Structures are given as C-alpha cells and as structure tokens.
Image (spheres, rainbow, N blue to C red):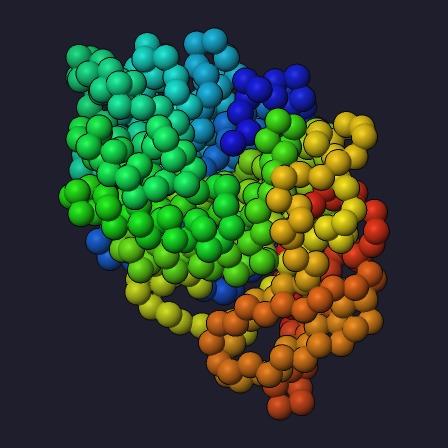
Length: 457
C-alpha cells in the first residue's frame, strides 16, 4: 500500500485549481451517469450492510492544498455509486502535520453533506499516543461512522500486542471503539493459511471483527481467501469486512502485479463477499495511485496526468467502479437486477513482453514480478436485460460473442491498434465505443489497465 512516509519526496506537490476543476467536472459527469443508472445511493441495506472505500489521506485527488469544498465532488461521486464512507488511511499524525490538515478538511466536507456520507480512520501501525490523539480529536464528530454506538476503527498491519495496548489506552481515556483491523498471520502472511487464520483468531479475542486487506492477488486468490477468512471469523462470532480490488501493480520496492482479467476478478471478489455473508465490504482502494488499485474517476479516459505525473501516467479505472454497481446493489439488497444494458472494457496498452519502469522517472526499464503471467487479451463485461451479441474488434481482428440475458465476462486475444466494442440486439446497434488509447509496442502506461464504458449508439 502506498504510504506517505515512504513516498514523501515524490508526492508532496500542488495541483492547480484549473486542473482540479477538470477533475470535478468529470466527477460530476460520473455522478449524473450513476443517478441515471442504478440509483444505489438510496438503496436500503438489510442487516446494516455497508460499502466503504479505502482513501489515502496522503494522496487526495484535489491535492494537498485543497479546501474542504474541493473534496465534495469525489464524495458525491462515491455516494452515487453506493459507497457509504471513506476509510481514511493515516500513516502519521503528530510527526506528519499534513495528515491532520487534510483530515480536518475531509471531515468538514463530509459534515456539509449531512448524514449522507461518513468517514472513519484506518491507521498504519501508529504509535499508541498518536492513535489516541487522532481518535480523540474526531471521536464525537457527526460525520464519523459509528457501529453499535462506537466509532469504527480499522487499520492495515499490526499485531495482538499492539491491538491490546491501543484498546487499553483508548479505554483509559473513555474512548471505546468498534475495532476491525487488518492483521497478517505471522507465518503465512498474505497467503492466510488456515492455520494462520486460526492463530489470528486465538491471539485476538478482543477484536470486534476482522478486515482482510486483499489488495494483492489474482481475483480468484483474493476471493478464495476471503471466503476462508470470513467463514472462520464468523464462526468465532465476529463481524467480517471483505475486500474488493480492481487490479494491483506496485512500484518501486513493491514492483509486482497480479492478473485480474479485467473486471472478472473484481466480480469474483464481490460474489465471494456476498456468499460468505460479509457485513461490510471495503473497496481497496479509492485513490492509491501508486499501486493502481484506485477506482476514483479523476478525468476523461484520455487524461493521464494526476499530481503532475508523480506516479507516471494514470489510466481511467472508472469502469471498475461503474461495473460494480450491480454487485453493490446485490450485496446491499439481495436483488440481482439489471435495469439497463451496459458494456465495459478493460485492457493493457502493450504486450507483456514490453518492459515498464519500477518508478515513473526510473531507468532502465524492467519487468515487475508476475509480468509473465499476464494475459495479452482485451476483456469485456456485459450486463444484459435480454440476449444480445457482443462484438470486439482488436486491432482489426473481429470477435463475436452471442450472449444470453445476465452478466457475462468475455476475453479476446488483443492486437496492436484501436480497440472497438459494440453491442447489438436483433440487428440493431445498442451500445458502442472505442478505447481511449490503442494497443502498441510502447509500454508507456507501465502495465496498468485502461477501462471504459460503451455509450448508446
């Protein structure tokens, strides 16, 4: 996970108001599209099922000099897609003054929305006194998300001793929390072996629930681990928060990636969360630009500059979140409902044989761990109210997929050139579109995925 402390020299910058205005307009367009679609912001959640998004406080879309009002477009964008709160990832407090400054603006923005959107903290192994100071500052804030009358607190990393010390310190100052952390088993780490999960449960009886921070892995791997972890914590009588992530490609010292086959891997994770009866889902992430797990819509699909290019070209992942609307409704209401035909596409801009860069400005070029397992294919996901035919044209190569009503994830070998998509029914063209960038030999996007959505023809 990209953290302020390890990327400080590269991320502290400013973003101009004119540039932010472009992002705000894009967020507004996404909001309008969502309201015309599934209307998830108003969907009831039986049993209190909620969807959150992991928000990197170090890397807000509007930049570190943004005012409180500048955060409203992305909060409204998240709301419209069915997200109930941001989990504010905080990697420092007393020693990193930018964290309290940005946090204050985020809470001010959320408060201005009334009770419609909430925030809670997800801390990265803070010192106990820092964590207590942070929680105390916002403990009674009206925009803080509460469960059972207590503020929700999560975290990434930590262990049983740290958790016990933190909860004891909070109890001492009369600040009890509902604690749902993401810890890793001491031995099996990201693999979460069955023995490792049992060990975590045995060592942490004081936890209220558990969050599996499943950012790194293939869609199948994350979905299978989530089922196993969720079932185990439920058996222990604890709440479970499941992860959903679009795609992972780290940088610098974490230069690795995992194939998720377009949206198919994300859909597998959504279904896993539903099948294991998770109470909450946290999308991992809203805005981690460095690990490519972001789902925020920050501009038109052909816009690639963000934060003055500090993470290199940033490709649109808006399709991952828009395609998730079907699953968010299913998760919250139990309804598997398709109100209108929709078509999304996902592909990388170069073959896996072309090297990328470990850091945006770095030389020479190299390959991340896992690059050999990537698929040189273009992926599409269709949500159909009735049978239709999906056409994919990759670099002039035509593919045709007759599909029944329902949800479908298909793939075709890609070729250099434009990537075009269309959906037809009864000989009539319903939806059509072309990827914002062609596939070529130059891996300038550094193994990232581009997403897009077809529009009425």
